[in-house]
Each structure stands twice: as C-alpha cells, then as structure tokens.
Image (cartoon, rainbow, N blue to C red; front, side, top):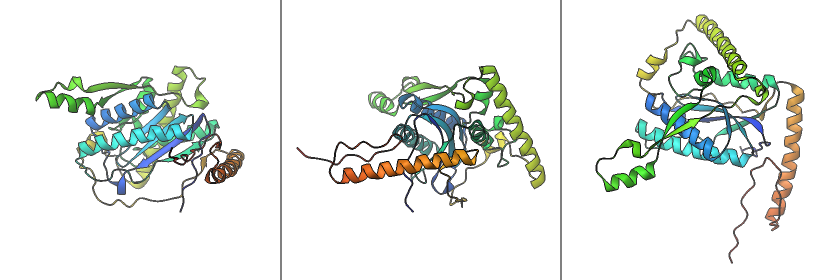
Length: 305
C-alpha cells in the first residue's frame, strides 16, 4: 500500500513515532544511552529548529511531540536524529544490522486543547501503561516527565566522532573531554497551554502524571501484575529476536471532535488536489511549479549543461 503524502501545516503540533526493526530492544535503557539520546535529540533540535514539547524513548520505539514549520523541516530533523541515534545506540548495543523498521510516522494534532493534552498524556504514560514502572517519573531511560515537572532543561552528551577520529590518529591517549560536547534541550509548553505561567504549567503536568499513576494502579490490580521498576529494567537483558507488534492503520489526524477532524480532512483533500496538479505540471516539464504549503515537494529533474 502506498504511503500518504506528507502534509504538515506550518506551526502545527505533530506526534512522531518510530520503531526499531522487528521490535528488537535496541533502545534498552542505560545511563550511557540516556545521556547520548538526549544529546542527539538536543543537537537535532538546535541544528534543525523544532519545538520539542515531550519525548519518551522506550526499548523498541520512540515518541515525540513537536511543533514544526514544514514537512521538510520535520524530515531534516528526523533524518539527523534517527541516523545519529541509530549509530550511537548500535555501538552501545553491539548491533551491526538495520536499526529502524521503517520511516518515522508523523500525525498532525489539531489546535484543540483536549486533543493536544490527550496526546501529551499518552506520551507521558509510555512505560507506565505497559506495567513496566508505576509512574512516568520512574522510567530509567530518556523521558521528559521529570524535566517537565521540575521545569528544567535536560543535558545530554554529543560524541563528536569526526574530532575523536582525528585526535586518535595523532595520539594513543586522548582525553574524552576533547570530543565530548554537552548539548542542552529546552522543552517548550504545549501550544494550547503556552499562556500558562511556568508554575501553572508544571502543576498541570503533575496532575496528568497523577492521573496516569491512578489509572496504572487500577489496571495493574485488575491484571494481577506488579511493575518491574526502574532498577529491574536496567538489570534485565534486552530482548533480541522477532517481536510480533500489533499493526493498525495510523489516523491522518488526532482530533477531539468530529468537526475538527472533518475540517482537517477537507484541508487535506484540497492539499492533495493542489499537490497532484503541481506534480502533473512538473512531469510535463514545467520548472516554475509551486507546490502547496505544508508539502514535501519532489526534487526537480536533473538537467545537464
């Protein structure tokens, strides 16, 4: 089945998901991977500016909530994040094969407050809703919950491989401080809550986390399971092999009301019509084609001379 055309209206909130190949636990949490993941994420957000509202990196997939200016900016950001994270995580895990299962999946979230808060709550619940930890604050890997509650930036490490290679060619012993660079990630408030004071924003995040903890306690009691906890997760050997993942078609948009969903679908329909018209003109040889805003235009044909 063909992919949908990428459509990201400027300034919209986007939920991004990406899974490891065959569900392997290549992102199994560890202190080294956590600081590396935050470093790569912070560097990607700095070089290809996007607003990062939340993130959760589980053993076999990642979730991000971003505000981006275009589909092209999102693609550049994700290309940098996924390629560098795959390299660093593979080295830490001793993995020598394909890392990601497929291209990232990006779903637009409408401007409705209830829609945006629901997606943030879902992101925060990762690791807790599966019964791995009892609270989002207990996740031992890269997760935004604690930073959001405390209202502080996150610090990670970027390993400058080019500089490290050059230094090691010149000297047998190299000080790691010469090629390890600190990157700082600042989390931005949700667009629907951007007018809140920092204290009020933190209070709202705490309320979401308490709701997640209550729901998890109820579900764990009903299923008769106890959360593993962060220490047990760190000590557990990562899963290797084929992990049968549940596959469902992704929605085109996350919306809270039928009216908002239909409005977005109408906008997407108009976008498709404009994109296909432009693509037909491009294939016919017109080089002054203007593709609609929010699109990911194909490259122009190569012309020699």
